Length: 307
Image (cartoon, rainbow, N blue to C red; front, side):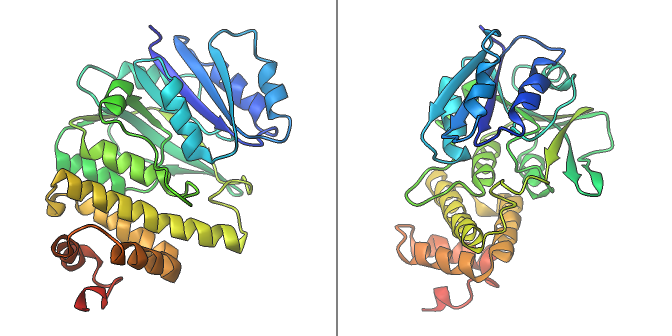
């Protein structure tokens, strides 16, 4: 059995595909499968991937364009390893990335994570989570708190337990007219709610490329930004619905509501109005929504629960 499944979504990635695959093949740890999900590319991405057919660890799959969330979900379905990690095609990892993450994994660990560098025009900026060389988090408050730390909700820079993902039947959010923005906040919120132990290591890192203007996050098109802000509302609502269905005490999950407030700030009126529309048509009990309103969202949704 392969120990590690690496899921690599690609969409029109011809400028990054060759160097990204080479970067992964240069890893010091070699017991992995690389699952490339081509999300309907119309450029030379497929031709570049075919240059690596000589390596039996590489599996290439093509799907009609549906977004990175659907590509990652297909990757989860195809994965055969014990552990799972996600990499974006325009990002970079050091040669010891897989090796150092796997060294920290033991039975009972839900997630291993490391620091993140952001590649910007002015150079690399660091997102260090802790000063210690390594650290274990095994209290639910500590685990959930990680969601409120810059960059942690992203799907990269982490090693997941694939059997846990499948036990939870967990996928990145898919729904009607949802385009995949903030899907990482949804996925990691649900994964961490069900986690008992996280482990951190400073011995490796992940470099996230913030220069790619073709990425969904960086696209300046006003219509794309509007669509993204509506997606924020769908993610928030889906998390609230999951927490209700699980019967969770919302006061134990402050960090999730901290991030919900952040998304409402970032998304402005578009996100607020979209969320209000979802709440008005919700099958969630009004009493539950009032508790959430009083606990966390009153400054954003003022007036709705007064009706």
